Amino acid sequence: MAGGAICCCAIARPTARCWGEAGQRPAGRMPVVARCESSSQPDPEPLLVQAARGQSVARPPAWMMRQAGRYMAAYRKLADKHPSFRKRSEETDLIVEISLQPWKAFMPDGVIIFSDILTPLPAIGVEFEIDDAKGPIISDPVVSVERASQLHSIDLSRLEFVGDSLRTLRREVGSGAAVLGFVGAPWTLATYLIEGRSTRTYKKIKGMCYENPELLKSILDHLANAIGDYLVFQIQSGAQCVQIFDSWGGQLTPVQWDRWSKPYICKMIRTVKDKCPGVPIVLYANGNGGLLERMSDTGAHVIGLDWTVDMLDGRKRLGDSVAVQGNVDPCVLFGPEWSITEAVVDVVRKAGNKGHILNLGHGVLVGTPEESVAHFFQTARSLSLDKLGSLSAQFAAAAAS
Image (cartoon, rainbow, N blue to C red; front, side, top):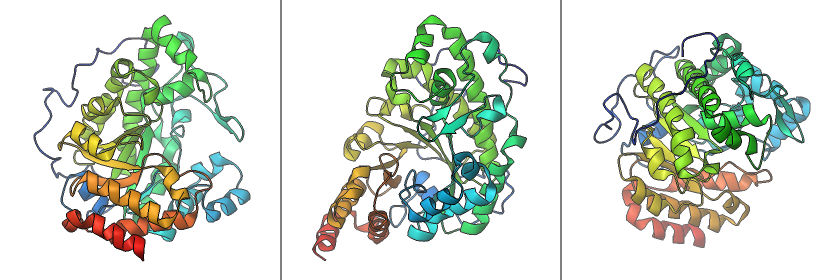
């Protein structure tokens, strides 16, 4: 939506698929074309990006959601020195240092910028605070037409610390890993804008679905425009792959997701594809077992599976036109090394030898032993996709050693 205040108008109801103007998904895997103009010089394409494109790779690339965080002693030490989360996630030097902590410790194939899905909100006119006990707090929630009219186009000059951090990470990481950007999906962001804080019931936003649907549509449409532009900004600043987190999409029924989440995700993805063709887009929703086929219709190149979906079942349901990411149970990392090896091998074997990015099915949990995270990545590096049929034998040998 062009500049100025948000208007309360509905977007068109979604069709079954929303991949492009013709409504047809291109046959086969994602084409390799030049990505949108970036401030960084092109490096050799990282393993993770190749896998996201569905290309053959020697081993499964691996990274973890929330791979930088409180489970790491280095992070806790830095957080003690800088107790404000906003400071840690909005100052370039701290963002870069925290983002690189797991890369230096475990050498994952993806280095995701340390940030938050709420980070861009002040740039559209929504201020927030982080309470250590209550989480994010928005003191002036968007629950009226008047308040919605105060939202404005995203002011990317207020997010230069994100761009600077991504450019620095590209220089630091080089071709050793893919630099990842991320955003929240419009529905997920709207839950915070409307509820004003974290919630377990989603009463306010779900009530708005029925009581004032036109207002909710206008808020979601505004977010889709703004966050789509923010994704492009991240790519232009150096992100080689981006992930959309629909963290609370699983709180909707599949029919509700089709109406209140999917069309706005589609709009963001079209923005990225129009301006940055060739850059892989990952879509993840927590609790997505009932949404997989719908998620694949958004045009995302990679679908992230949570741990409640068996990888083999997910592959069968999604087909081979999209890549997959995931989906080891985060709690496995509290078990012995042999159980971590077993879980990794099981997921990799079921995912197949193309189009798979190894990850957890959710973020790393607080208290996870760093040694377990290290073993996860060591196991991933030891596997050969050329010998996929012998992975069980590889696991047996690793477990016996």
